Length: 94
Image 1 (cartoon, helix red, strand yellow):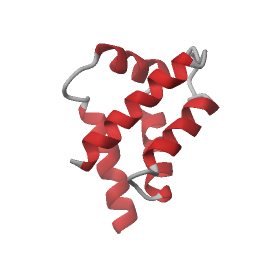
Image 2 (tube, rainbow, N blue to C red):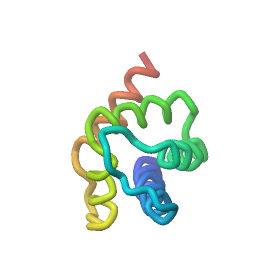
Image 3 (tube, rainbow, N blue to C red):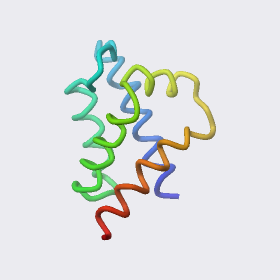
Image 4 (cartoon, rainbow, N blue to C red):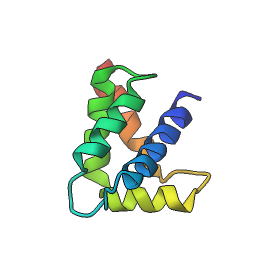
């Protein structure tokens, strides 16, 4: 499933960002996080979708919250991940 690959890429970005010394604090995502997210996302999705999805995630989560999800390694992402992806798909299709 395409979304699961995107989610896995998103969470792996978090791990990479934290390994690069990014503390994930603050209300905005770091430039390292954004860059790694876009690099991973655009492997499977359009740049427009990835920009939208990143913006939706920033509206719904802090970087720290996403890092916590990655550390927990939950099987099912929160519904907001699906909602963010769906909102972008609808926006770009519509």
